[in-house]
Figure (cartoon, rainbow, N blue to C red):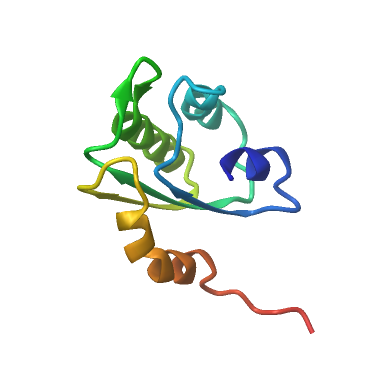
Amino acid sequence: AWTVAWERPNEFRKVLSHVGSFTNIRGGHVYPAIIRKTERKPIRAFLQAGKNDLDNLHGSWPLANLQMAAALKFAKYDHKFVIGTEGHNGRHGGAIMPASLRWLWRGYKPQP
């Protein structure tokens, strides 16, 4: 979701990331540094992570999500980061899905 918005911010501006893979898997680990060094794009992001997520040869998922949230804050992105106690699953993200979507779409007014 983040990559699509990053590459095509005029078409995709809202990112919902539950248990995001911002570790050294498929290049996700580079985003915090890139976000800090690139002019802000019109993206709103909701990140959810779990304190007991994976920690393996690709990196620490909780730490990577914290780094991503810190970079978004530094670059003054409209974002929200919520960390729970779950692992690499959809329990926490599923429980907060309605609130996540309301936050992402707040202020939306359909075009006539």
